[in-house]
Image (cartoon, rainbow, N blue to C red; front, side, top):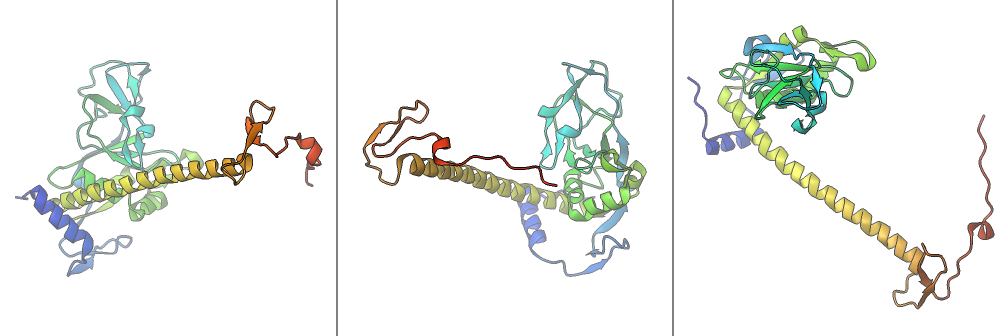
Length: 275
């Protein structure tokens, strides 16, 4: 029986896992995967999942208690249920596309959207539309959050786009049977959960740093714009005497400055259409 690690132990194991190499590696037996830690396994998705299929074609309405998860809901940073649309009210209890907690959702069509992955964990009634592939992993074999992180790696994204995609331009589609036959790297279940917990924590920390940097960049851009505006409309002397410019939208300017129309201080011409 697999024992689930308590939070503290999971954190310790995950941190150790992320920071050291395992003592023994072995060939995975799958050329594109290479070597893996000796105690890890490789299994095809169809072995570790009870269900792998696309969603349904919804009957859309403006509002309903049944929400629809589409590609717009599945972004690289996770699930965005605020983008959900609505299915006409119906008893969807028996629908395969009715989403359950821990369902793995994969965008299955379209360049730039195909391959985005999220884990479903929303209250309420949801279904997936036909552009989303639903994967229901066997809980005794695989942790959905670990699989989500695995599928977002360059290793698996590269495999998806080089092997599992058919079609051209924006009409590309993810092969369900190809996905079912795809090999997945599987640590023991407790280790999967520990790795996923570590990544949840570390990616959240990095996201917070990115948000803070973006806020700082925004403030610096505002400061830059204000600096330029101050220098070219008031000059470098903060105590200079001002007078009204006579142009309402310009306001006051340094007393010794002038205001002239552009046509009096520059020659204006238009360019030509090149051959």
